[in-house]
Image 1 (spheres, helix red, strand yellow):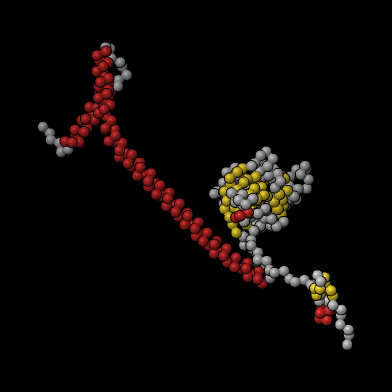
Image 2: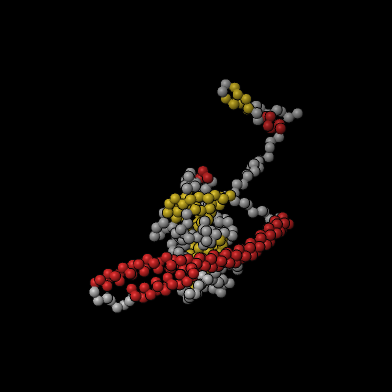
Length: 325
């Protein structure tokens, strides 16, 4: 008799072989002839399934664990790559922040040298949209901030967008103590003085109550191209300069457009999903006391004393001027 060093391994192999033979027997495609064999076959199938299931789960456990470990390793590698990219982006943004600060300081020094008036800082207020009064020919919103919070007519309104970082939404056209009505960019009555940031070409962006805006009065042959950022030009004094409006979507030049391009602009704000807005309140300017204006030269002292009036019996009587010496 031969003694095996690993009886447990031998028992496992014999069990697997018996189960495999049993499965081949019970799951045979040839049906049995009588009902007794059929019932016996069904019983053997149930026993085989009950016996093989724990073994299958036992064999699948290390496979599933190895797959999970491989997925975790790949996830950690992906996280490490993303972390490296974010560090590089952070370094780039830090360098840009330093350059921006230097340019800002240089701008202040140059303004002082040229004697230019410094730009006025504006206060910001965040409000929530509580009503959408848009229709087929109008596009407007109602917000929960009004005159009590410093909101007045022509207050600039920016839309808050998580993807694009926000952009111009419109301006306030009517205000009450605790609410205000905003005329949005796509409205037919909306006209915004703008310019292309790259080429500094000025134009007018108007609304057509459509997803895209229309840029007007851009001569053919101008230095513009799709993707250029369109910002407010500051002309007119209503909108501050440099607020992003949108990007040029398409450019067309036909005989019907005459000497101008037909340009569509895609706004940065999603007007169908915006929920909060930022309002740029007008800066508070301290008004100096008005200068005293003199309409005529002051009369001499003698005339002043001569024109002094007195009350006598409820009537005013002018004193006679003194005779000259």
